[in-house]
Image 1 (cartoon, rainbow, N blue to C red):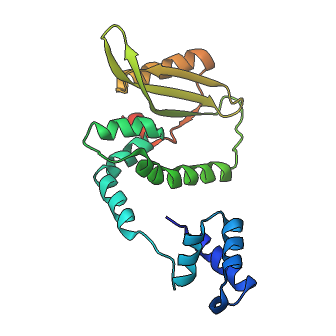
Image 2: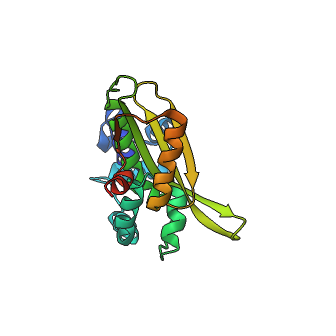
Image 3: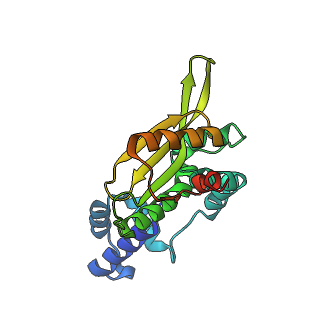
Length: 208
């Protein structure tokens, strides 16, 4: 499908070379050469009054993913933005679409998160004052003892002053493991006066 910007480029080249009513064979070839499109495509563009769009395609993509968007937003809030992992999860729930549809949904979310990250000014704290905890999902891992795949979670504890980091992986996201990870972090890096829980998934456990 020809992009709107390509349609505009072809029309613009045509207007700058010769008036539209006087198109000849050679100008058509030159426009095709410059744009990389074949002559038939160029000829169709010059005859159309407006660019052609496939509106039905967009509706189909939205429709296929729509029942799973609430689930996806929940997983994104947990810290999972891996397209392949999310595709496997919603496919097991009945999703029949391709990963390209999912990627179209995830791309603006990733870009928005990146913009927010770039816009965040690092806040320096005094030693021992503050730490931050993030708690999210990182796909799946094979458990040999149980001979099955299990979800993999990561606990990340970062000190505000030194930026020292403690990382621990678990295969459970219950409160017992959440607290156990805290104890491991405290033993490794110490206990600050305050802990921030920026990840919504972490905040839900910290509120207990």
